[in-house]
Image 1: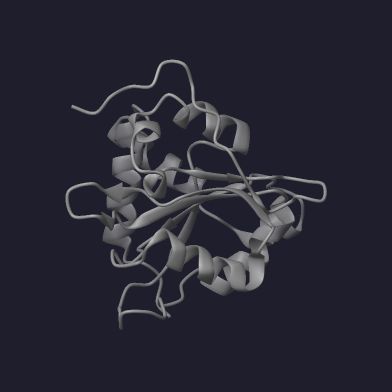
Image 2: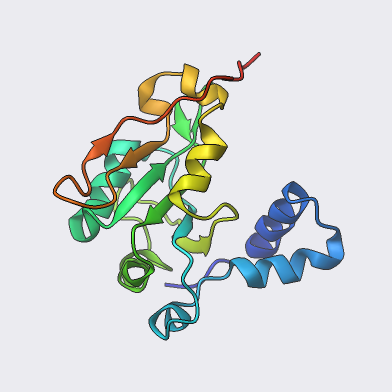
Length: 183
């Protein structure tokens, strides 16, 4: 399947750069920093664990996407979040997943990166990049006081046990003391 168009990739990089407070001159640098190269992971040169899954058809529910991920990667991740547009109750086209071990990423990339989505007869092609926020602890810290924690549980980020006999099973998301409210 063809890679995402340069215009789409550049637009995504520009949006990420703006969100990160970068000027236009740093867009290319940020884009390269977030680029997933499975060969670097295999060689041990990149040990990041959190990916952004892009170009998800908006009819995919959290349950559907997790079902697709779990076919080959059940128990390999400990954080998952598919943001939902609260007005239309559809996903916004991307998700975040944190792998327990960076060594799981090349297999995940072979399964999903630059592949068309199987459901809904979509022409969208999955694109994987690294997420700006890395690691389960940082993701929990980022979301625990979010207004999301006051929303329907089906719209919240999910965390899973990272090791031991419960590895891969859901665990409660620690809600922070200062939950922001949506207006």
